[in-house]
Length: 333
Image (cartoon, rainbow, N blue to C red):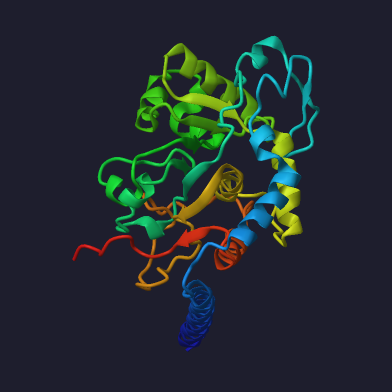
């Protein structure tokens, strides 16, 4: 009798738990659908570049952050003996030695005049089967984030053209053993990006510095055509303050919005691909993977992707930049 009552009690608890879980999932689905509907309502209006809005926003951004001059550490703006202050943590400033100085770009890597069109390519699952490769590659300058794969069928959807690609040092740790042993596989993995700029946040956190310097030494030693450059932490601090003034509250900006910020200073027309932070496609309403190449989730909660997207959607609505959220070619059946 006691055993029967105990089993009944367990069944009741299980049913209650399942019911609670289903209710939570239903509310989550409703919330997601509501968010998507609101986003699509804002996005559905015919897009047209608003030159005054673009120039005004660009002027604000440039006036606060000076990306043209300060985004990248160079031998001109960071001489031997100067001190580099980390932007991601409190840490004693790093004094620039001649050896570290030798890894800095000798001159500013960007031209004096702006590019006409730039594509900033995020890695969102919305790019899967999108057919956007040709449109992305038609841009004059293409920016990519975190060493994404571009071959084995991805070319059709994300293109291959690259002018600048970022690399999170965690990738060097996880995929290439922090470059402590054999390093050729790292250099070979960079071939797809040609002679583009490889942008590393070497001075955001203390742990990033040694592996970022090893990456620069490896590229030089093995004569890769890619050109390593380092983010200037002073620029990143200014950028965080700027976006905070625009209403963004996040522990740390994502690589994506950092690159959008840079593009808005460097380019006349900025187009964004792969920037959709939700797990449901905005038009097809089918489930999306986190990235177009895998479903790996971010380990940390450093970034506020929906909040960043909301700001980017606002800039799209104002005609400052253009978000691409649909397929560029019909999907193959």
